[in-house]
Image 1 (cartoon, rainbow, N blue to C red):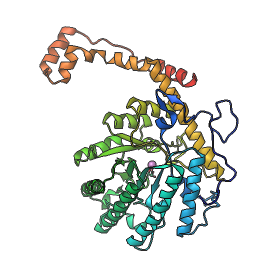
Image 2: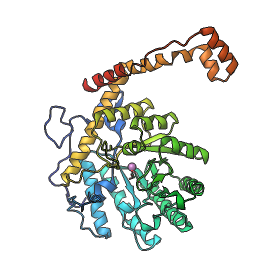
Image 3: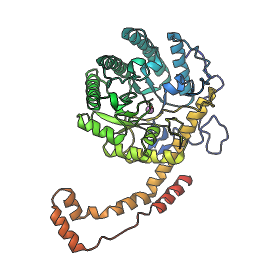
Image 4: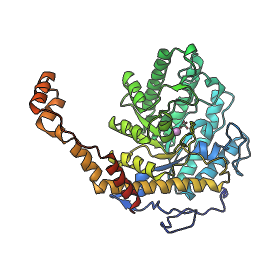
Length: 440
Ligand code: XUL
Ligand code: CO
């Protein structure tokens, strides 16, 4: 790293819950062992290049506000490299071990595919050196198939063949550089893979195009020896009216319909879950039940505001729910907690990048500790086990194994008489969760 871009910030350290030093961790203690694994390994934090380095914090009504003294606003390769230097300095100082990027965040688009690829190669060589000197690793890479006007009607799902072909070129390259950088994942977020109006759309055809595209990408990933996992990131809409991979259930159905289940896992993002009208806990449960919870885009929305506001995840109830889902499946192997989050437009100083990420990291550390207490306490698990206990009887097992007919069920119902009722005790369980979140 040539020079310090955040000269006033020293590496954030764990200072304990009593600390009032804002640029420190009160709860994230990377080396602390929890159930035999360090916090660092449980949480697998990543920061994203797009919001951290490329988001000027403009909104539909106002100009960018973010102060980025390392960025001269040009499209030059030198500027792109300086930005990468600043990003890696930020990662090290914030103790974030992983990063994620879109091809076009990292390197400027050229006037031809070949030129774009050359620009990307230059930045990948630069990022590789930064990875080596800092020990930071790549969580996942992806291609931006939604910003350029060529993709206005969709990329793989566009009505014209040309957008599909161009997207293929971009994804081929993005898969290759993700492999070069040792990424443990590669993400497909279908930014414009949906429709704006059905009046001009052949939905059946577009879904088939998307499936073919994903097959081609998976085949290419295999052929180049990509050792990571392929993830799809559901989102219901924005910018499209309807995105085909709209939530976890619909994405799993899509994968199943087109023979892609098993090849792809899901990257679940909180604000996408809420835009879909679901809780994050719901989306995680659906993905995990299908053995398809691969990674998490860690952010949160703003209740009552119908946008993807991508706030930093500072809600401890939310982080507790997320960590419960992750711990229940034994952790994330190739994915992690990627802060796909941006500061508010008013948090425009460079130091706010540190405050924002530290707030998210501390919230997840609290969530990890709370989820661990909830699991160790056992009352929630016991309650659920007890609730389904009758299925563990001989008859329950035989029904599930398909060995009992509907008529046999009916006779048994008659023999048993009226159904015995038991309370769901939701409020009691919610109180237990509150107690265990607050008891440190
Ligand atoms: C958009 C979004 C993307 C993906 C990567 O809402 O979440 O940034 O995470 O393309
Ligand atoms: Co995301």
